[in-house]
Length: 72
Image 1 (cartoon, rainbow, N blue to C red):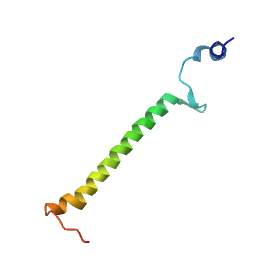
Image 2 (tube, one colour; image 1 turned 30 degrees about the vertical axis):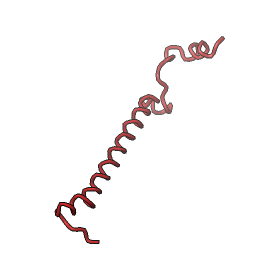
Image 3 (cartoon, rainbow, N blue to C red; image 1 turned 60 degrees about the vertical axis):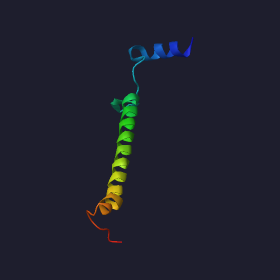
Image 4 (cartoon, helix red, strand yellow; image 1 turned 180 degrees about the vertical axis):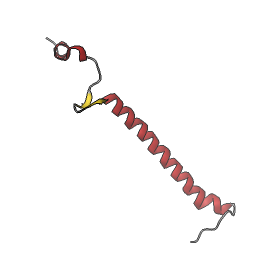
């Protein structure tokens, strides 16, 4: 008997459904965890980009237009 048939026999109705990450957290599946990691990684990159844009504005753009002077 092949592995897939044995798993189907063992799992019964749950065969082919997403597996939970931990048995004590039944609503968090591996698919949901991967989606969370994808969204949080994208959010982190957006945050890095915003931080760089703010730094460039404060350090270079503002003083170049005379908006303020740096206290070097």
